[in-house]
Amino acid sequence: MGDQKVGLFFMIASGTMIIGRFSIAHFFYGAFDIGVISAGVSLGFLADLFGLRGMFMIAAGIGFTAALFFMPTIQSQIGRSVRRTLIGK
Image (cartoon, rainbow, N blue to C red; front, side, top):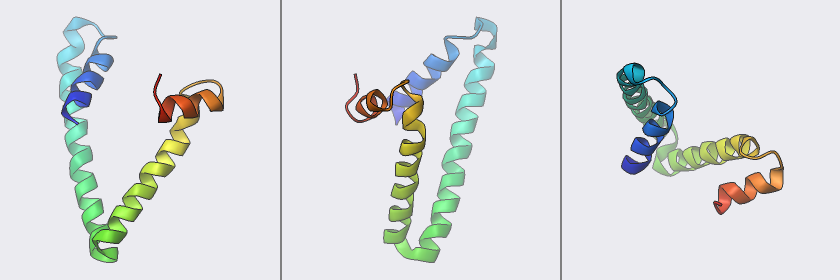
């Protein structure tokens, strides 16, 4: 995740004025840390309820559902979106 996080940050920061980039950096890394902490708490709760195997199945289902939900937003045609998501360019 290290390389992707830096690349995503620079993609977001490139569209802002130079003076505001420090604020974006603090917000971006703070939001990332909050996301990691909240995922740890929620997945720990799921692991207590369903065991580790169930937790991983639920997490995979959430990821698959998110991919299905966001896949059509990549390109205007659904076939191109699926190809772009699964294969790349």
